[in-house]
Image 1: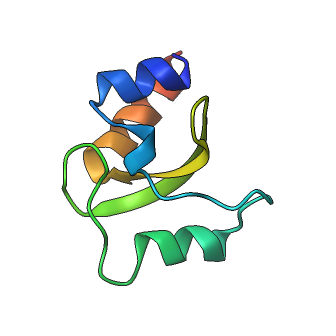
Image 2: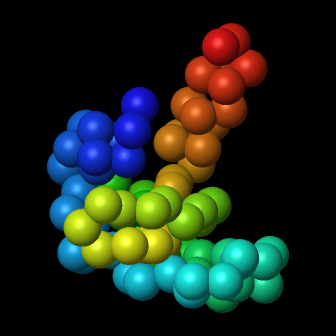
Amino acid sequence: MNVTDLLRSLALDSAELKPAPQRPANAQDAAARVGPEPLPCAACGTPARSTRIIDTPDHGRRWRRRGRDRVLGWMIRSATA
């Protein structure tokens, strides 16, 4: 699934996602984005457990926070692909 389809399936607007650094992100960057008091998942609002950078066509690199269920779903799909 490409980034545009992903954002559409999650009903997310890339303009609403926080800009990510242009340099490669590290674990400290990701931990700062999730925070000690977890920020909400960008799609469902549950506490974020993970974050990653996506490269959007319209707004460049953006942080996408993911809740536990979204992370687990991704792991399961990756393992069975």
